[in-house]
Image (cartoon, rainbow, N blue to C red; front, side):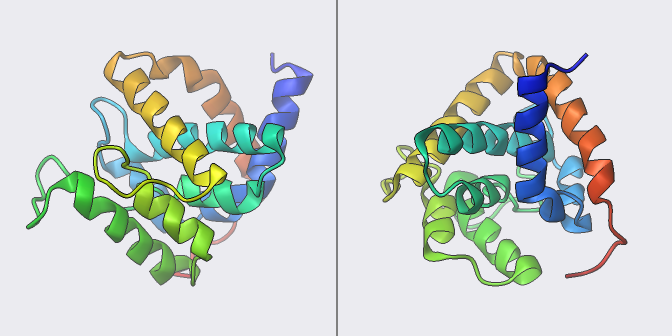
Amino acid sequence: MQQPKQAKWVRGYCETVGDLLTHEKVQQMRQYPHHKPIDTLYHSVYVSFMTYRICEKLHLRTREATRAALLHDFYLYNWYTDKHDEGHAWYHPKEAVKNAELYFGDLTPLQRDMILSHMWPLHLMPPRSREGLALTLADKVGAVRDFLRLSKRFRPVYTCIETEMKHYARPAASR
């Protein structure tokens, strides 16, 4: 049974990113491994839900930040098998921005910076906003949880989000 406070968080989160989560290209993120055995969509929902909660509590730009956080790994390829001229850590933020703008239109400067800088400190582009720092920290927590096999603890919340998303279902569209 979902607790009322958790239900409020889930509902607010889904109102913020529902249109993105129901998009067929975002749903394709399920096909791509992130940190084994976690898929990219599960990881991105975890990170964006955490970013949503941080930004709400700190009265930051929650909508912009949560949407950027959901799309921070929107690279749509298997990074274990598909290789690029530069390493995945440097390549995929640029690919995520490209895909986000292709399917959802222009990102705001805040969103673009958040996505491009989320791999800091691995690469030397630090986030320029508190929202970007929230995403970067949520991503690092998510990655550690993935590697330690603790991500399954998010499954009840993820299931509630999936259930809530049935209210946001829309026909498949390319844009």
